Amino acid sequence: MSAPVRYEADDHGVLTLVLDRPESRNALTDELLDALLAALDRARADDTVRVVVLASAHERVFSAGGDLKAFASDAPTVEKYAGLDRFPRLYTALGELGKPVICAAGGDVLAGAFGLALACDLVIARRGVRFGCPEINVGVFPFMISALIYRSIDRMKANELMMLGDPIDADEAARLGFVNVVVEAEEFEATVRDWARRVAAKSPLLMRLGKDAIAATRDMALPEALDALRSRLALAFTTEDIREGVAAFREKRDPVWRMR
Image 1: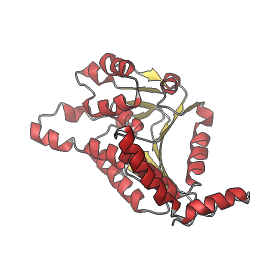
Image 2: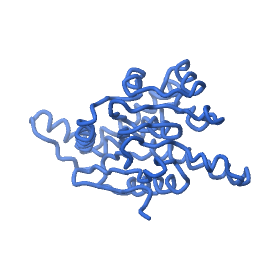
Image 3: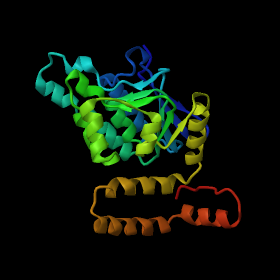
């Protein structure tokens, strides 16, 4: 059997991680989560990767979320508890990757996968796809992703999504602010490719410094965050890439990033 996550890198610095268990609607099984974590570790260490795209091999579903069979299994509670560390490790890995991550939502994004999308930096959605956390409809609450939902969506709408279990479409998701752009099906792949290459063309070093700064300060109080960001900006001033970027802008040419 093929790997549950395909690792596909191109010559533009774009790495596409394709969830490839269409027969299970890309359920986030332990096997798939372990493969995704391993792929992110590999991407973090690969200097040729400048942006990561999360995509799906299923035509209509990005991922249906957590593995319901595992939830209802007779495994000991302590064993189930130990396995749940995969979700926080995954969301943390996305935040600390040091490289932008784009969720290419070409199909429905549900349950735990909704949290996966919210942990990404950018979300591009095909018109008609749905986002939501229907766990409550089968007697489960979206415990693991509630922290991400509350950090991304206003409280009352977040409660509605989690307590009623009804999904919303991509246009409503864009209105709520957690989807960047909604495109027609025939434009979807081209839009994802265009955005990924545009992001990959930026300074990988400054992008890493910036993303690390966001991850470190997002939950700080404003005074502490500003103080920490001041130090990080001072560090950015010491890089060759910031000088190259300014020089290229003045000289009306493309920058040549030196990664230092």
